[in-house]
Length: 364
Image 1 (cartoon, rainbow, N blue to C red):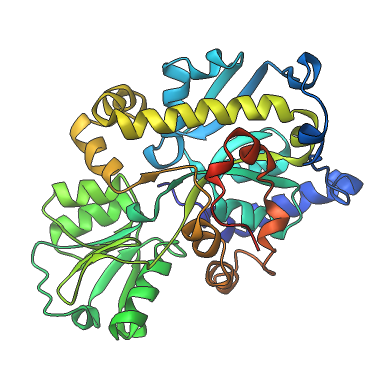
Image 2: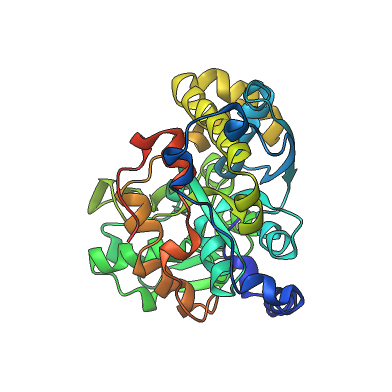
């Protein structure tokens, strides 16, 4: 994953967001919202279900974590089946989506819920209308081929190459807390993921912490998977873990949400078809996605096994991705000044209309 929150550590980006807020003026003071009861209380008519907008641009990232469903829905015609003419805009750098949303050029986009927490903390009027995937399995730590660990505590004193402020730090800190590791004794070197992969192969660092596709590339270069936000292969902890939760989400600006509820329900139906296709036809999905993501089939197969593609709103999403721990972390690294309430950056009413069974846990 091209990291969700790292772009906000830059003072330049923060300044630009503040400028955008000032320029928007009173438009942010009373964000529009969908009347959740209107569609169920009124008789269904052709007019009430008509698409308000047929042509729209969906901004995503050329990344298996972010836009797999978007690409599948586009390539297999699921958007067209819903009567939509969607321009699927895939950018190369995920962090660029935040400023695009803030500036008004991405009213409908796919990124992560961390981005929405950060945007909402600066009063950008945006709402998540559905989760798409749990991607914490791609936030991981890979050890060098020479690293020998008898327990997780042996990581103390070791050097990890990691981008400054990277979200994978959440997984490292939670691992340390559970396994009795003093995280302050780990030596961190600020390295971009691509540079960390090279440094790991040369033996200049003991491990790297990053996201896909760099995790898979590090393993292909001889590295050893140690742990991620959802899985551990450490000597004293094997199997599933709950050290991090971050989800890809579909978000829309408040103005677009208020004006285009039927159009957005059509988008959700198309993405639900794509989600089911990815889970039921993984090999075929990978063959479709690989050339679009500029990855080999082998690389993408490994990457996609670390993701859980699901639009379900469950405990992992509600309490993990949007819980107090995430807010406190984002605040501690300076990405936000205050922690917004999850309900302030969510509107799941359209998802509930599309498939009520997907709402398993209610937002607090």
